[in-house]
Amino acid sequence: MLGVDGWYAPQNVEHVLQLKKELPKNREVDGIKLLFGCETEFAYDGKLALSEENFEHFDYVIVPHSHTHMDLVAPREFIPDDRSHANFIMKTFMQVVTHPLANRIAVIAHPFVPGTSYAKYNSVQSHIPDSYLREAFTAAKEKGIAIEMNGSCLIYMPSEEIPNCEYVRIYSVAKECGCKFTYGSDSHRTCEDRKLYEVERFFDMCGITEKDMLTTEELLARNKK
Ligand SMILES: [Zn+2]
Image (cartoon, rainbow, N blue to C red; front, side, top):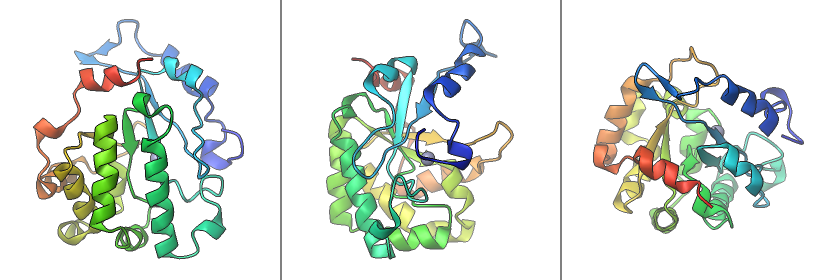
C-alpha cells in the first residue's frame, strides 16, 4: 500500500494474490472449505485502500477503522489524547458503514481497538458512550456488516481484566443491536497462537451465541456487485 512502511509496505493487491495461486484447485483441505479474503486499509479521509474493481479478486473483504498506529490512517495531530482518539475512531467507524462500497464489505475488523496496549485501548474505549455504540452498531446491522472478534486483541488483554473491560461493554451493545459476528485470528504467520481458548469465555460474557455468528453463505453473499 502506497505511503506505508515496515510490514505493510509490500502488501499490495498483486502481492496478496500470489497466495491465492497456492490454494488447492478444489479449495478444500481435510474437508475444510478454503475461502480467500483480505483485510484492506481505511484512511481518515474515508478512503478505502481496495478499489472497486479489485473487490472481485476476493471471496470477502474485511475493513478496519482503527489502525491508528499508522500516520497515514491517523495523523498524530488528530489523536493527541485518549478522548480525541476515541472521537477519531467513532468517526471512522461511521465512515466505513456509510462508505459507497459498504454493501460489499463483509466485516469490520477489531472494532474500536486502537493499537496493541490493553491499558491504552481500554482507556480510549472508556470515552465511547453507549448511546454512540447503539447508533454505530445499528447502522452496521442495517448495512449487513458483521463485527469481528479479534484474537489478537485478546492476546493483549490480561485474562483477569476480561470481566470488567470496556471491550465486553462494546460487544454487549453490538449483540443488543442484533449484529452478526465473526472470529478472526489476525495471525500474520501460520504458527501464531491467537488465544482461541479465551474466545468462548469472552463471547459468553457478551451474551453472544452460535446463532449470532455470520454463516459462510452470508459472508459470501456480501461481495456481490
Ligand atoms: Zn487490522
